[in-house]
Length: 516
Image 1 (tube, rainbow, N blue to C red):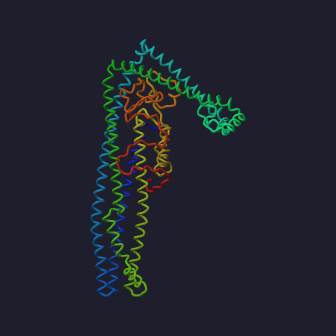
Image 2: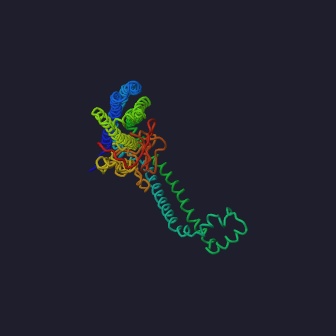
Image 3: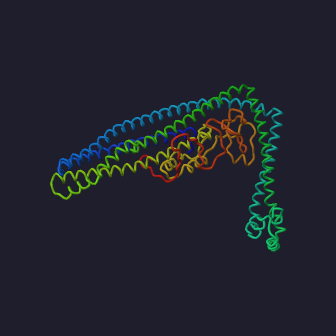
């Protein structure tokens, strides 16, 4: 069962919302754990004060009580300020999420408008295709392009065969260490530099391997593919120029029929989508930075909170406090035993809180990394126009089991994105329009920009060119909303710009737990 481009992007967006929700929930848990740990220490301090009243003389008791109380008061005040800071950070993240959701809705609306405009242009171009077919100028240019295309295909096949011969027939030469020694030394050429003694021995080696006959053969094996490749590239350039001229004739026919305003409107709408994508990325980077700041607060790592907690912990860990507790354990009075038991219980609870908080912090880091990776994938998805209604994916597990595997760390972001690329297809008729269709193997191997279902192929200066730089790559043209087609990068190399936050992209077998 296949899934259409817009539905696929919506599924990725839903997964993104789930990640952010769990990230927010974990941040709250970590923050609450830090606050509970602080309160447990306050309770522990109170228990030690009670123990001091029972066992110490008034002077020592007052001195110890003063130290603990001062540290406890500072910790309590810092905790209040910390709670306000956490609340403010959480509010900031909610505002950023709301802004991003609003932009995402605007983008969906813009793409709906764009789809309608493209549908109108497809209808118009289809109506002109039969007229163009009868135009002698267009027919001649098409025939010329087909001939250049045939020549380019033959040239490419010869080049590939020569390169295969170089690999296969050149292997015995490369596996002969004596021959390769002389070859790399430049023996028999003006590049050869050696002393008379070395020349003498090299001459003996050359006679042994019959180098004088083998060298020109190996040189030809290496030279012919290079020359054929240069020739094939020249033929490819000729086809590119002819295709551009053919596309210009097609565009002129559509413009004469009233298509230019539509093309201009589409260009404006595409620019709007690109602007929205850039703004969404900016908000995501702001949120990433805000999430990191919240995580720092939630973990109690801000200097004020961390300092106050450390001061109270130090006050409760002094030598005289440890001595007081040790002596209380050695006695058998009811009050001593009760207070000691409560202190032990408080410390056990503190260890449990710290252990649970440590696990949650690790999960939070994993979720943050997974969110950034999913942002990278969404960026590439839109950049390569996979959310186009004419785009579909034959593997619906991409938004099911494979998505869950990625979120749980079973597969890397690079591998998951590669699955999307391999599964993607354009709707029938969208690969090329009513105009010229290339037959070159380089064309078949690429994924060209599909301008329409039954329309014309547009050159880079038209509404289809949005991707910066030269639009044509191995027979395809860049374009379409969401960014230009980049020719299909292989795994891992995400191009999403990062302007804030850590921007780290860790791939690996993380286990997040919870909802993921």
